[in-house]
Image (tube, rainbow, N blue to C red; front, side, top):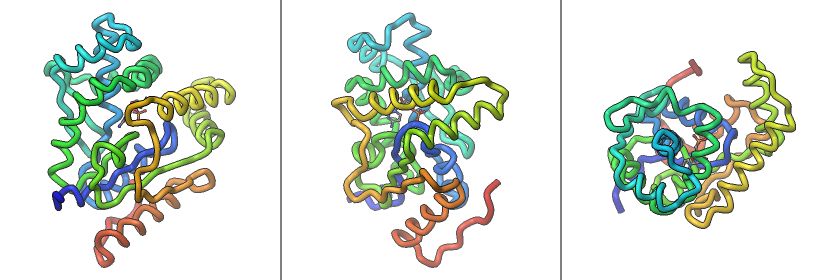
Amino acid sequence: MNLKLQKIITIDGPAGAGKSTLARELARRLTWIYLDTGALYRAMALTAARRGLDPHDQAAAEEMARSISLSAHPKPEGTAILVDDEDVTALLRSPEVSRNAAVISAWPGLREALLGIQRALGTRGEVVAEGRDMGTVVFPEAGLKLFLYASPEARARRRCQELTAKGEKVGFDEVLADITARDEIDCSRPVSPLRPAPGAVTIDSTNLDIDAVLKVMINAFRNRFSPGILIKGNRQ
Ligand code: DC
């Protein structure tokens, strides 16, 4: 067993459960590296669209994945992605990219192409890796595996609040339908479907705020790794 892999925390879970916020904050507190693997799938979706490829076209998507020059650069705020030396990070959050990423991430050849990049970043150790298959496929030997769940209704409510705060008008039903559709895609794909890894600690955040979930995560970390360790203070 690779001892460095032990020093990895994986956080998997459905869209909108708060994985990014929590993984980023946990990494900051531990002074570990934050790795957002969804950014890699988003970069694949963006590149497919730019090349005029249909994300439903498995052969085209897998061929693109084998030939693309893509690199990931973890930073405290997120994971920067370069495609052919162009920094595309700022282009990865649009609704179109989100929709296409959900489709394109189903293709096994594309997932395989991203495996090496993710594992190479993980071998440094002291990484908090966030995604859908971190504990099940990419880092099965991780020292601590977390699965973050929240009911679809709770996730839709939070998403509506976020969008309203940004001044965007959205209906609850529309957001809920979008979340349910993404859950269906994530959970039903034959390769690396979303599910808790064996031995994962599942945290149901339906009725918990971010700080409460963070406390649960830090307790799980202390139990698993270092009971006496000093962890950085308040959220920033
Ligand atoms: O976490 P996110 O919304 O940024 O992820 C974007 C898409 O990529 C999402 O549809 C699921 C997929 N994904 C995946 O299949 N495996 C991962 N490890 C991370 C993301």
